[in-house]
Image 1: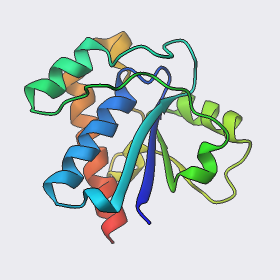
Image 2: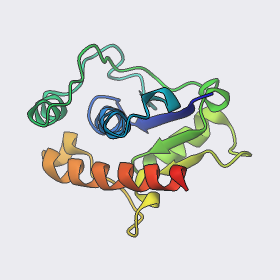
Image 3: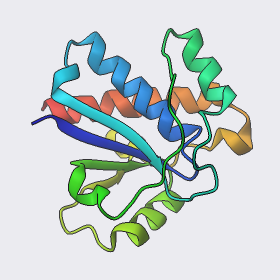
Length: 151
């Protein structure tokens, strides 16, 4: 049974798809694709059905990482049972994730930067415009998460 990871942000067009595709790239480079199921979702329905934001898409494309076919979806209560890790990008996401799932009895919810030595929030490039800074945080968080899982 693969390890199932759901990355979550507000709209599922910037940070969470960035984390989804960065993590997929990391596991692929290690030959671990069969060991993981990785996806992303939103806590809101504002961007439902929309493609990945051009800032995320362009940055990842420049690194040889495709986001082709990804459209925003909304997190559901059922995702709690479907995934082993449900990972938000900021405290606002965490609050909304808890609202969606009801409670976190199995301690599946966390923030991506919790897997680094500098826990906190990943700035939303929708507002900051700084997709490079977001990528740096996402990469560091995904590497930390992968190390945590491998331990």
